[in-house]
Image 1: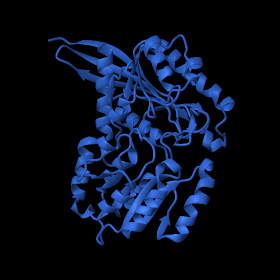
Image 2 (image 1 turned 180 degrees about the vertical axis):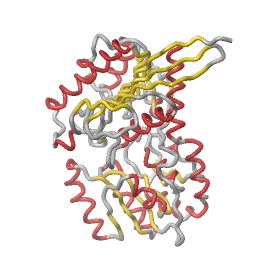
Image 3 (image 1 turned 60 degrees about the horizontal axis):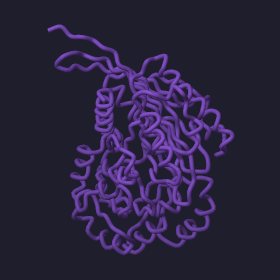
Image 4 (image 1 turned 135 degrees about the vertical axis):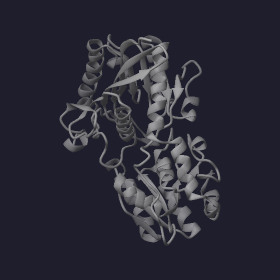
Length: 412
C-alpha cells in the first residue's frame, strides 16, 4: 500500500503575565518551540510541525515575558515545565524551536527574543518596562504562524486583562491555551471567555481541581498533569535512615513555612528548609522566619538547584506542604515522590489528586493533623512512592498527553 505524506504545523505558545496578590506570587517566561514528528496511521504518515511559545509567571504586580532563563537556574516552576516539555518533544523526534531570552539552554533550536533575562538585567516588575517586549513577542508569534503555516498554537500562559490589548488580528486558527495559575482570579474569566468565543481558543488545565474552578460557560479541552524527567531526581541510599522533615519552595506567607516549623517542632523532628527569598518577601522573612530559625532546631539552606534536590529530599522522612492557598498543581510534591519521599500536605487545590493517602503521603487540614500523621510515616513504602511517580508524573507522560490534545484539536 502506498502512503500519503502530509505536513502539519503546530504552534504552542506559552506566555505568562505577572501579577501579585497577598496569597500569590509567581513568575513567567516566554518560549517558542517548533517541532517535527513523524507518525503513521493505518492510512498515511504525517510530519507534524509544532511551534511552542512558553513563558512563566511569578505573581507580582506586573508581567515579565523574559523574567527567567529556560530552564531557570534554580527556582521556577512554570519555566521548568516549559523546558521539560520542549526537551521531551525533541526526544520524541520533534523539531522544536524555543523562543526565550539569552542564556536559555535547550536541545531545541533557540531563538533569543530578548538579550538576557529581566532578572539578570535587574529589571523590576514595572508594567511600562515589560509591556513592550511582551506585546511584541505575542505579535511576532502569530505573524510567524502565518508565514510558517503552523496548524496549532499552544499558549502556556497566565491570562490577564492586558490580553484584551495584546490580541492581534492574526490570532486565529487552532489554539490551545494552558494557564498554570488560578483561573478564577478577578478579571481572568473575562479574558478566558473572550479567548474562547472570539479567538476559538481551546483551554486546558493542569489539574482536575483547576478545571473545576472554571465558570460553567467556559469549556475545558483537557487536563494534563505536570511532569518531570524520570531521571532528573532519584532516591539516594540513606544508610542511617531518613532523619528530618523537609520544606522546599520559596519564602512567602501562602507557602506555609510557619506551619512547617510548628509541625516539625511539635513532632520532635529536625527541619531543613530549602527556599528562595524574593525581595518582595524579605521583610516577611526577617520578621516571621528568622526569629523561628533562632528559636527552634532548624536548618535554612537557601535556594537549591536540581543537582542538590535528590540528596536533600532523599534524606527526609517527609516533605511538608502546608500551603495556605489553592495550589493549582504543586510540582514540589512530585519532586519528592521521585526521591521516594512521602508528602504531608494540606488539602488545598490539587493536593487531593496528587497525593494518595497512605501510599505517597498523607492529606491533612491543619497543624494538629499533620503532627499526628508524622508518627505514621513508617507505614509508607518509599520504593512504592517512587513507582507511583514513574507511573503518573513523568515529563514523557506529560508530553504524550499534550500530543494527544494537539492531534485531537487538529481533527476538530
